[in-house]
Every structure is written in structure tokens, then in C-alpha cells.
Length: 632
Image 1 (cartoon, rainbow, N blue to C red):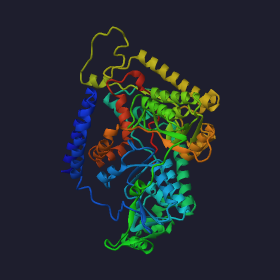
Image 2 (cartoon, rainbow, N blue to C red):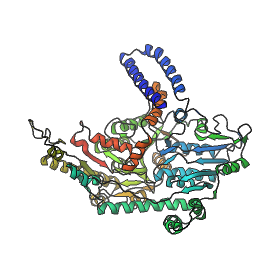
Image 3 (cartoon, rainbow, N blue to C red):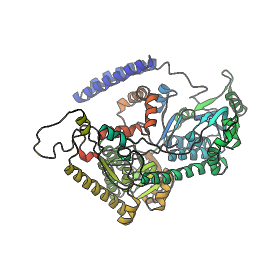
Image 4 (cartoon, rainbow, N blue to C red):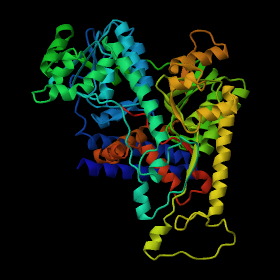
């Protein structure tokens, strides 16, 4: 019933978009003013009815005033990201989606913390991680730092759960007290990547991937041409994952006042402790010092009632949801300071601003930031595995132009700034990365699959006439023309040479040294800093401070985000559509398939773009690492 209603709503939205485009093209502004409010009102009240089944108040929520001894509930449903697709309108999305996952912006958690540390009405904060879907280690560390700020300000941060996965437990470990259900599980398992390798299967099917690359360690296309990982790929993975685990374990150990080796022991001792005897995972976590107590839900609630106000009618602790609390805070104002532009997701050439980084779209944002009154410096926050070489170069060049205009630019690396993501960052005055950022992957590849042998098996042929050899030289129904393959290899080599040349100039390193560090090798931020690929280690805050310093700004400067915006008339409706898309287009089965294939939805879209019939050979040359920062 609900699914049908949502699909109908999506159809109404498309009709309405067509109508609005028609109005705009005709220039009938007056008609639009008269008709659109009527349609909008009708759609709004229709939506209210459609989602009535979802509109059940969450337990104990209060979006009104915050009274003394109120518990603040930080309920993290979804993934932590640098920037949501369209950040505006989170309140309506939450009302429509209720318990469904959403993007959680790091900046919102920071703004929440800024308000809470000064709010004497709230002493206890409950962290609900039951719907938390993780994020990169960098994003986890950022949220963990905010939880530490709350504790330093005298707040008590409490967390209770039935189950803690690795990402959930990382945040939980930063709480004042961690409670687990007596029959619950704390699941630490380490890090690892085991992608599918399709080389043998494609050979059997008669499909030739035709991988062309520059970089000994550039393993982005390996799963399509090999039956197993190369020794270079395994060596690179070991170096990366071991370092990320070291940072992960050290952070938890610091928060829990234990030794990092205890986490290794917690995993490695499991077979010995559970062999031939009764085993209670929750008790094991308690004895290992990873949780502070084992409590049933009513026992946890009873603890809260001892120090906080209880609603006489509901007989529950009075709570306010963190998003409701955030709605009560004044929007920060901008007079003079630093602007931040976020580049998040795979890189494309054009105007994409949702689920990816459009080269032209990002140029527009950088120019808008430059024109914004009071902007004296820029920070580009990169969270990208790379992608289009053309798109990457468009953005790098615009950063260079911005610097030439006297506006300093600092690149801040988030969870990932690899391949094309590093290409972008190399154009800045300075690069700041987190210790656990995944970066490097300086290399280039191209992919030209051919299915001619499949057609041979079916006795299907292609034939015809072309005026020149290049017309149809890349036709997936035919073998890749060796003349075109030679040209493409030369092109890939040239792009790689340009890549390391730009890095050489930007980093003040010899081209030979950059080539040694490149070859497609992936580094953590800490490893990149040791090798001169990064200027400083730190988060977004440090990058902003560095940009302000380069611009000569005094203390107390302002910070603003310049981000994609929707037309004013569609802000509300598109917020509804995003909710519909989350319900209709992202079923659990699709999410499970993504995890099985070890690939992000945005990367699937990127790959489909390469395979598009409209794609041309130059578009297949990519600076993409095809790797993920969601390893926990």
C-alpha cells in the first residue's frame, strides 16, 4: 500500500516538474505565481496523508523547548558523510522517513556540539547507534572528537546497544559509559578486502576486458583481467589496512584506557575461549574491558531516570532529538572568512552534483565562492576515489585560477582523496590530510571491453563500410583495433606523465621521486605525509585555520559552505522526492548486493557511464582507484 502510494507520488512529482518547466519556458510568471501555490498546497496535504502511517512520534521526543535535566538523544540513522546530496530540509525528510537511514553530515554534528558545550540544561546525552551504517575512518574520527569535546565540557555521554559492529563500537568507545545487552554481541573482526575476480570467467565467456594502464600498482582494473590478486596489489593492501587498523585500535584504546593489543587479543582469543564450553559474547566483552556493564533496556532507562526529568504522564525520561535541538539553534552568519567547497564522490566531466563530483558543477561552485562577499580564502574538502581525468583537470585548473586571483586555497582530505581526488588536491596552496585518509593512487587506466568472441560462439558477425579506419575502431562487438590500442596506451602514458609532472611542481619533488611514490600506490594520510605528498596532518578545522592564516585573517573569522542549491520553488518537493527515492529505490536487497560486490552505488553509476553507448574512447581514460573508505 505504502509502496504504491510512494510510486504514485514520484509520478506526480515528474508531472509537476514538467509543468513548471513549461511555465518557465513560456515565461508566464504570473500564471506560475497563481497556479503553483495551489499545486504545492495540494501535494503537501496529499503527502501528509500518504505518510500518515510513518508519522508516529519517536519515543519521548520533544521538538519544543529544552527544559533543565532533559536528555538529548543523538540517534544516528545512516552513514556519516561530508555533505548530503541536497543538505536543505533534513527535518521534513526525518518526519517522512522516520527510522529509515539518511546521510549524517559531519558539520551538523560539529554544530550540535558547539551548541551543547554551552548549554547547561543538558547534562546527559544518549547515543543511539542501532541504525548507524558507518562511514570512513576519517568521518568516524571526526564524530569521535566531538563526543570527546562533550565529555570535556562535563557532559555524560551514554550508549546502550544490542549489537555493536566495528563502526558502531568505534563511536561507542568515545562515550562516558558503554552498556551492552546481556545477550548482546560486540563484533570486532579486523579489516580486509576480498573483491571478486572475474578474469577467468570473462575469458570463458569470450569477453576481453582490454585493460590499458600506467602504474605498476594501479590495480583498479585487476578484478576484470585476473583470477586472483597480484603480489603488488596484496602488498599495497597489507600496508594500507595494517596502518588503518593501527589508527583504529589506538583511538579506541585511548578512549577506553586500555592497550591497543587488547583488541587484537579480543579477536584472536575467541576460538580458544569458546572451544568446548559455554560462551557468552556479552560477558566476554565486559571482561575484556570493552564495555562498562550489561543492562536490559529497562535497567538502562532506570539509570537515566535517576538524574533526569521524567514525564509524569508517559513515565519516561524527557528527551529531545538532536535534529529537533539543531532546529532551535540560530543559523551561523557569514561576514568575512573562509568558504568551503565539498568534492564528494566519483568525478565526472559535467554538471553532476548528486552522488558525484561534476567538473563543470564544481567549477561553478568555486566561482560562486570567489564572488561571495567577504570570502578571503577557500578550502576544498575532497572525499573522492577519483574518476574522469577531464573532470579532475577542470577542477584543478579552477583552483589554480583562484590562487592566481589572490585567494589562497587549501585542500582538506576527508576519508578518501585518491587518484583523481589527489589530482584535484595537488592544485592547492597546501594539502591537509587526516592520519587515516586513503590517498595517493597516482596512476591512470582505461578499459575497453570487447565481446567479439561471444558473438563468434553464436555465429553472429558484423560487417559494413566506413570512410576511415577510426570510425568503429572501438566497437565492443569487434576486437579492439591494435592501432587504436597503441594510441590509447600512448595517451594513458602521456596523462600519467602529466599527472606526476603536476605533482612534482606542486610538491617541490623531483619527477623521478614522484614516479617512485606514484605507480598507482595507495597510502594513508600519515604515510603520504612522511613521503612529502601531504603538508600537514589534521582535520577540516586545521585546514580552515591554515587557509585563514594564508589570507591574513584575524581570530574570530567566519566559515561558510558553498554548496549545490535547488531552485527555491522545488526545495520542499525535492526533499519529499529524496524520501521517496530512499524508500522505493534503495531496498535492503540492493544494499546487500552492493556489499556483496564490494562497490558503492555511486561507483556503479560511474562504471555504467563508461559503458554508455554515447561514451567515447577519451572518456574511458580514468584516474580512479575503485577503492572504498568504508572498511569498518
